[in-house]
Structure formats: structure tokens, C-alpha cells
Image (cartoon, rainbow, N blue to C red; front, side, top):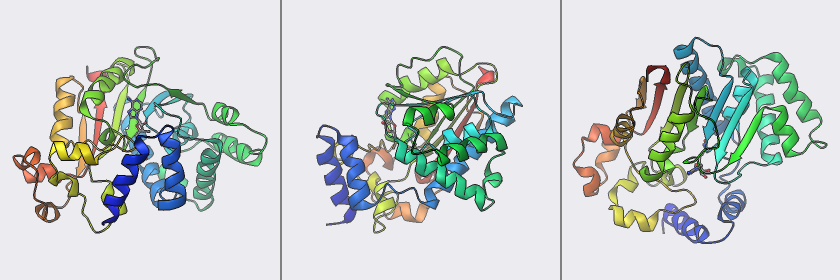
Length: 311
Ligand SMILES: C[S@@+](CC[C@H](N)C(=O)[O-])C[C@H]1O[C@@H](n2cnc3c(N)ncnc32)[C@H](O)[C@@H]1O
């Protein structure tokens, strides 16, 4: 049986268990080794941080957002720590489950330290040296500090709640961002979340910046399939294959654009990776996709930027 199918079955089974996320982390750590903070992941998310900051600067003229909100930060808070390093005062991360821990934050901080040591950090972000001193001090005292104290020093607040109903005030956030998260949220949940983001982001000098990876995530793990493999299944079949641990909505760029337009969220800039049409052609598309232009279906990654001053 192909590796991706084995993984889909295991994730499906885990998704029915209590503490599914914890069991999934254990499984990733000890079986698939997918939890490691490797260079590829670290520099990819650091690149996202750079892009979020660039677009915030471009549309507001300010050097950094005082307040920010990220949905679905995951195990390693690379974007929140980048924002801390450039000067942000109030960095929120919202998720329905607490996925980070003292150990994972220490791992992330060590990665920043290493990146700085080899002279690469300033190629990504214009960090404040005094903020970097905070990281050094946390790492030097890591044994004595608990998770809450570490997060306090980094100006990071984890909000464990459903982003469809945020406890944040209207017009209170300078930069709302996400990284490889929207593709895991089906439209019936994503639409109310985007409405909440529209409510909390500042309408003067506020920016939204969302990276979406529309590739079949099983292909990241099983190199015998390509990134369009999941598009062969009908919606009904996909409902059986997909799981609540790492759901994949399979929605494409034209769906996201429609959602933005329907919600009247401006698309000030939209960049994307074209994908590979030849690879897409090797897949017999399910009828839900077959009627759309191949050039649009093939787009594998996109980045939506919204200058909220426009609304
Ligand atoms: C795959 S993870 C994101 C990965 C991560 N950003 C990265 O860069 O690797 C998607 C996250 O979105 C969170 N999420 C999904 N629906 C949500 C909701 N309604 N409110 C808050 N968080 C949600 C999930 O709990 C999950 O942690």
C-alpha cells in the first residue's frame, strides 16, 4: 500500500481518539519524524515573515506592526518571534488547540540564534539588537523559566479559541496573517473566520496577509504521488479519505478569490506559483475540478494581501 494511504488511514483512526492532536504529535515525532524543526521549514516560514513585514511596510509606511494576529501558528512560532524581533508589542496567536510548548519554543529560539550566528537573520528581517538580547537571555535562563514567562518576554499571547468568534476588539490589530493554514479550513468555517478578521483588523493602516499551500500535503511525505493527486477524488470519496487532524479542503485559487470578493475584502496584491500543468494532466480530475481551466487548477501556492485602509 502506498505510504500516503497508510498515513491517511492512521490519521483517520487517530482523529476519532480523545487527545487526537497530542497523539498525532507523538506519532509524527516517533514514527514519521515529521515534527522536526528542520532548515527547510524554518527558512520557509522566515521567508513568510519577511513577506508579511514587507507588505505591511509597503501599505502603511510604518516599519513594523504594533499588534498582530496569526491563526494556526502550529508547533513552532517562527512568524510571531520574527515580529517580536522587529519590534511588535502585542503578538497574538489563535488556535483551537495549544500546539506549542516550552520545549518547542526553546527549539525555535535556538534556530533563530543559529541563523543569527551564521549571519543569515538580517537577510530576512531587520531585527532590533535589544530584542535579540531578550532571546539570548531566555536561552541562558531556559531551565528557570516556564512557558508563560517565556511568552511574556516575547510579547506573545496564545488565544485558545475558535477564530470564528474572537475575543479581540474591533479595529484593534495592525497585521492579521496566516501561513499554510487556510487550506486546512473548509469554506463554511473559513468564511466566518475571514469576517472576524475583517472586524478586528484596523481599517486605517491595517493589513491582512495570508499564504496558502494548495498542494496535496500527502505528496510532501510520499514522493510517489504528485501535488495534484487528491484532485482525482469526488467530494464524497474525499470526505472518507480526509481527516480532522490535518484536513485539506482542496479549494483552489478561484474559490479563495470568490470568498474575498463576496466578503468585500480587498485583494491588493495576489502572487502565486503556477504549478506544473504536465503533472496535473497525469491526474484524471474529479468532475468538481474538471470544468475549470487547468492553468487555474494547477496553481499550487498563493499569497493574498489586503490593504484594509481601502475599505
Ligand atoms: C496545519 S495547521 C497550520 C500550520 C502552520 N501554520 C505552519 O506554518 O506549519 C492549521 C491550524 O489551524 C487551526 N484551526 C483550524 N480551524 C480553526 C479555527 N476555527 N479557529 C482557530 N484555529 C483553527 C488548527 O487547529 C491547526 O492548528
